Structures are given as structure tokens and as C-alpha cells.
Length: 299
Image 1 (tube, rainbow, N blue to C red):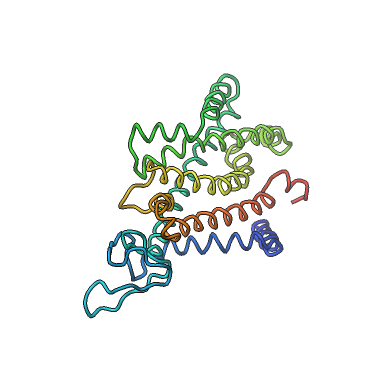
Image 2: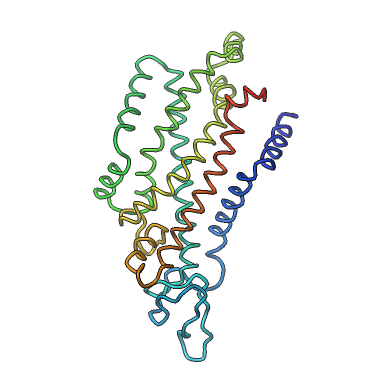
């Protein structure tokens, strides 16, 4: 009963010592809060157009949309259609993070199941599954995504499906390797000798000891998926209007760079800051939750 509080204390002390991890946690936490609650705030709607307020610079207020009404201030400016960039960045955060978390959860569940099953089954089952993983790893992810989205059409559901395909194999390969190592250790051999069922060994001894590794991989994959989704949306193959995506905002604003820098630069900054925060947090989780590192520290 003391192991969990002790582990939580170790994690908290480790986090306090790592300033980069604290910065990453703050960045990710702020983006999650803004993604969850930002669109609920009163103000300009992300899809609301007002051509009379097009390309307002950050902090500009322009003219009121109706006589006698006070002009709302656009804190991050507006785009060429007069849409408020602050509202669109917040909505884009919700879209990008929702897609990224869905992809990570599905890929982690599918890849971990395949990895554990292949390691435990062995023989021809392991060979077939790992050859499928090798084939998937041999296909360029961006080429596969563009091809599939061109065939099945661009939508959020199809985008999640396409992003899962190159992601689950990473979980499968790493989890399989770790399970093959764990199954030869003394505590697993002892459980088998005592007559423990295979299901109990899988859940209590093998999966429980690869959970930290899965979390680390998922955190590091999260940043890659955010970039991948933005790239596909930038190409017009990802999130489509009326939904908002940082990549689509970059695509819309690139033609205005010589006239107005903010429609493309601000969503680009949002992508960069988010990915940096996730990577900083992922580096700390890797150092803390890596099974081999824990073994060396005697955790």
C-alpha cells in the first residue's frame, strides 16, 4: 500500500528538480485548459466573418460591425476574412489536441496488444505479426497518409484512422521487445512455477511493467502526431472547414505573409510551443519511467 504514495513522492521530487519538465508541464497544462475552456468564453466565434475588420493587426479594434456597437478588440488580430485569430487558435488547439490524444490512445491500445500477443504467442504468429510491422515501417508515413486521404476523403475521423496506421507499429515493436525481456526475469518465472494463469501473468506482471514505457512512447508520439496532423491540414488533406486546425490556418495565412504576418505566424508559434512543451515533458517521463533506468537506480 505504500508503494504508490512513495512512487508519487519520487515523481514529484523528480519533477521539482527538473526545470525543463516543469516548463513543459505548464505549457501542456495551459494548452489543455485553453483547449477545454477557451471556446466556451464569450467573444468572437472562430468562424464568424467580418470583412470590415479583415487583417486587423494584433490589438486592433477596427470598426464596429453595427452602428452604435462597441468594436471588439482583436488581441491576436484577424485574418483576411475578418475572423478572430485568438478564437481560431483556441479552437485549433482543441481540434489538434483532440485528434492527437485520440490517435495516441488508439495506437497505444492496438500496438500494445499486438506486441504482448506476439511476444507471448511466439513461433509463426510472432513472425507474421512482426513482418506486418516491418512492412508498415517500410512505407513512408506521409506518402501513405496522402494516398489514403485522397482515396477516402478528408475528415477528422478519416484523419485519425490514417494517423493511427504509422503509430501503432512503434508501440508494437517496443512493447514486444520489452515483454520478451521481462518474461525471462525471475519474478515472471516464479509466477509460472507457482501455477499462475497466463492471463494473470500478462496483466499483473507483464503489462503492469510496460505501462510506464507505453506512457513515455505515447508522450513522445503526441508531438509527432500534432506536427503530422498540421502538415496534412496544411496540404488540405486533414481538417476541413468549418472545423479549425493550426495547419489549415497556416495554409490560409501563407499568401498574406507579405501584407500581414500574424495569420500564419501565430498558429505556427502555437504549434512550436505545444510541441516543445510535450517534448520537454516526454524527456522527463522517459528518464523517470524508463524500466532500465529505474533498474539502474534501484527503484
